[in-house]
Image 1 (cartoon, one colour):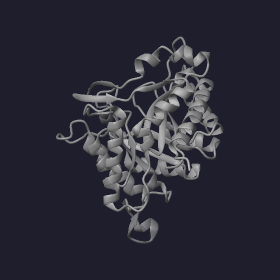
Image 2: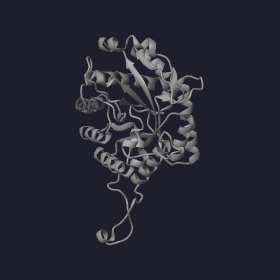
Image 3: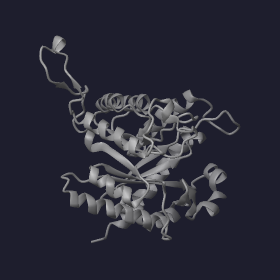
Length: 346
């Protein structure tokens, strides 16, 4: 594989508390745009945002991604992930195509069932009520995704009004962006879901936590998930090469400020965490916090980082644009060395 793409993944938190450099929803949005501009300048490849509802975080990705698209020229813009239980698939198809056209084809949309939310079944307040057998809305999320993907591919979604169009027939949503269907990713938390993702012809966004625990280290479990995804993809006979991303917390300790915020946490978070989520065991990946040369060695040994083509770095966005721009530049340098170490010398 060639150069690993590096994107940042921001949760878009804001809180009016001491120490926060992001005090309001407006500051969270404006700083997100500024960080994407700074990231592009430092050679980072992607600006991705978590989408959450009923919480002081980013909720409406398309206005934000469109604004970033208008201020940048190269960086990929995306989500990780949109909870499809909340989405009107046809409205989302129009929004996504418009955003992609503004960006010149740089949209990379991560979608999924979503993670546990602050609201109880908040999607019901958006008007989407799952069937009785579909307790957590997983089937509904997949159904919404299916309609969305067919809509962005230009399938007819409505009957034409002959009084307006002069003909009978059917209509697709408009505008369309021809290559957008190749840039939809599914956020998968298990090996089985990764195989399903390949069957659907979507790219794989491997979750920051896996909702299963087989006892092996997180990176190996995730690498197995990626391998199963690629094997199934090949079996399906899809023509294009799929994309695969993994998320990591990477904090190079490069100055007093990064040492102040993260030096102590390095000892606690430098190992996998196993906990309970949704009634089962979950394995959370460790954080990579330390001096750059130490991180190069550790990331080069991470089986899933080696297997993926894209690494999404979770950023502590409440520390502000300048801190995160420096963190991303340092992480880009670390990953360049990881890539160099992975290439055999001739």
